[in-house]
Length: 72
Image (cartoon, rainbow, N blue to C red; front, side, top):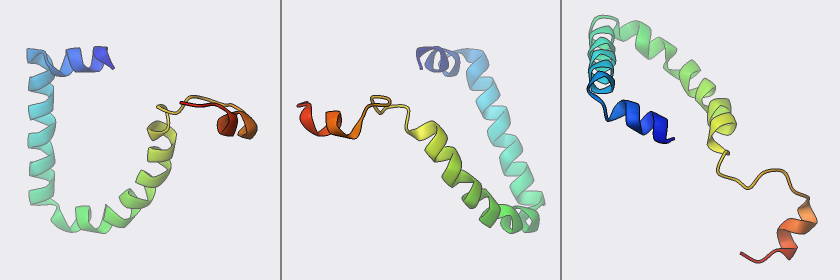
């Protein structure tokens, strides 16, 4: 995560972020109908992606019994 924060904190990271944001605004302004038509599919795609990338903070694969016996 530090490498990502290092990139986004740099001048080139800021430039890339601004260019991507500008392209997003341009595409949304010129192709609003297409963006709104794709919105339900993007929401459905977001669910499995959040499950794949959102659970990395958990402590890994342990058995069910060890989860209840350990104290945090």
